[in-house]
Amino acid sequence: MFWVYCSLGAVLVIYGVTLFVLSRSYPEPNWDWSQIDTSKLDFPPDFEWGAAVAAHQVEGGNHNNWSEWEKRVDASGNTPIQHGDVSGQAADQWNRYPEDVRRMKEELGLNGYRFSIEWSRIEPEQGRFDEAAIAHYHAVLDALQAAGIAPMVTIHHFTHPVWFEELGAFEKAENIPLFLRFAEKVFSEYEGKVSRWCTFNEIGPYSVMGYGLGVFPPGVKSYRRMAKVMRNVLVAHVQTYRLLKSLPGGDEAQIGLAKNIFQFDPYRRWNLIHWVQCRVMDNVFNQTILTFLKTGHFHLHIPGRVRMVETIPDAGGCLDFIGLNYYSTLLISLFMKKEPPFEPNLRPFQIRADMPYAIYGEGFHRALHRISQLEKPIWVTENGIADAKDDRRALWIQRYLYALNKAREEGCDVRGYYYWSLIDNFEWAEGYAMRFGLYEVDFSTQERRLRDGSQAYVDVIRASRSGQG
Image (tube, rainbow, N blue to C red; front, side, top):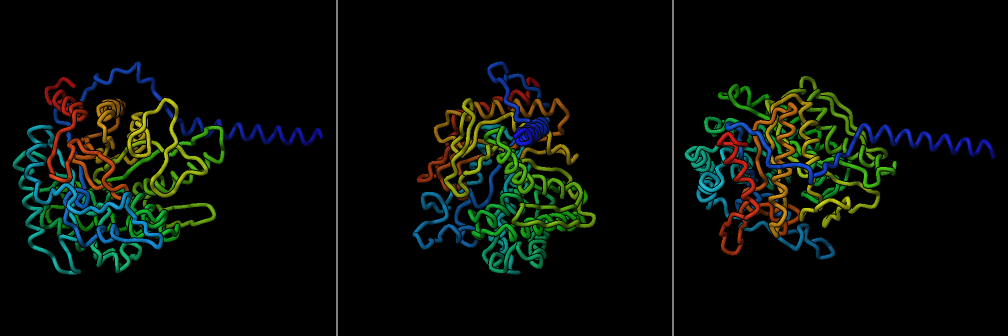
């Protein structure tokens, strides 16, 4: 019996030491916001303030890409998008971009705008480029230039033509040259009007949601196929970077990608199973990609499911800047839902956004420091709140910009911030229920109205430009 007690005691000691080491290595800070003055900010006058959108989410009228996925009906009669939504006319920005550009300049005072170019419009059929679509994006860029708003163009923001999907998309490495051809085309067209380019948006969610959880197109649930897609998209980024740098204007262009970071924190910090889940998920969503971007070494491991290890020669450091998409932390537990509508775990003191996560400015501060390890200039390429009632948006802006300012003061080289999003949009698997826009959109009339909560962002921009914030 004595030895039983000794063995049990040893197990408890090891368990306790393990939890102590994990807690110290991966802290979960929660600031006392009642003691913080979020108005004390110090952004330089030349800091870039912007907003972001993605083509499929706002343009409307797409019929040759993700839109085909929206129409699917499974054997149970369920559609893949919440509430049976389809993108349809979205916010009709394809036609209304002059109005949106004017609002960005006159009402918000922005000097940056991140948007994507829809591949399925530019190359609706393999090898055939649409001159009218090419001319359209020239007109958008000309309008931005006239307004003094610097564009950041994303080449692939989740969507691509149906013909590319039918060929196997990025699951097949032999398809990468097809993406390179598209990237070369748009860069050659617009390089004189665009100084910053994102090759891809959120490689982690694109791979995991589409090929691991099956929530995004093509609806695959295979961790092995997910790993292959993630590897291939990272390789595509490297090859795109090198290609664009070799083209006329490539030396002057700044080329990066948008990397999302969600922290994965254990819902019960005393539960070692929750900790194991967090470390595995962080490896898949975050560390695998960050390590590759820095070193070219790809190592994705889900115990019992998949392990892929490869080093791509000379792939590390193929970035001129890094974009950070950040929203919140995810508190992980064993029985969390893996399909929408997701249900969040929250701390008792936390305030929830309409999306299933908390307002967590502390996590933004953590993410900025983490992505700084890539040793590249940082643009915050997405950050914003889904808040249909508009009763938390100002709080979000105040807390997150305070966290951003604090990170900058501590040495994070952040050059600009793009709020997500400029206008209400089609929010992928969540459809139209999630209202992220600085501007509320009435989708029956397409009327835009600046939300009251957005004024907090306008105030920070004005203070920054005047040298007072």
